[in-house]
Amino acid sequence: MAYGENQEVVSRYNEASLNILRLHNCWQKIALYRQNYQFYKWKIELDSVWSEIYQDVMRKPNGDEYLNDQKLLLKQIQEACNYEVPVKDPFALNKLSKLEKIKKERLYIALSNYHLWLRKTQDDVGKGSSYRDASYDDFE
Image (tube, rainbow, N blue to C red; front, top):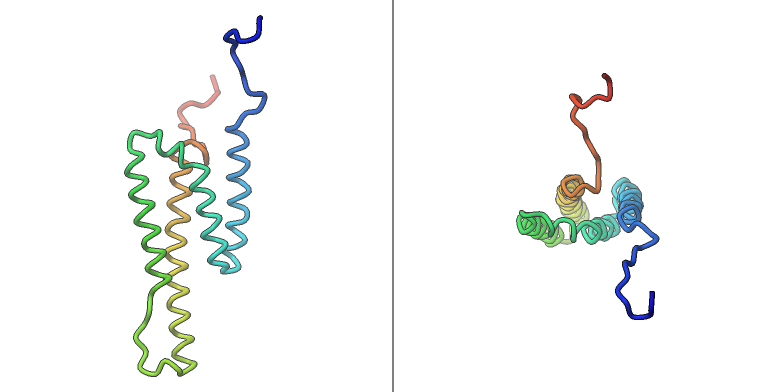
């Protein structure tokens, strides 16, 4: 074949398997950050998962619905970060610790919701768990 002629080019690497491997690595880090209440790192890794599945989500006919859901979840996380409880004496240590505890609980719940939504979304786009119908057993 002469230089410049059209030829079929096939990648030597399967990007889909590398994508799933990157997702697996993200979920491992996420589990560690969640258990250790490292909220910032947890959020960053959740965003990494979103980056890995975004293109697949947008290929779905209802991709815009996923995008709207994601924006709503991110808004809830932001609101949890900015949440303030009215405290009459802001310098009282016991009241400040209550404020911080409430903020952390709200942030944990918001991050957990985003976490669970990402897991479901990953499954929806075929990059997560795979289930098969029991009626399709290989038995004959």
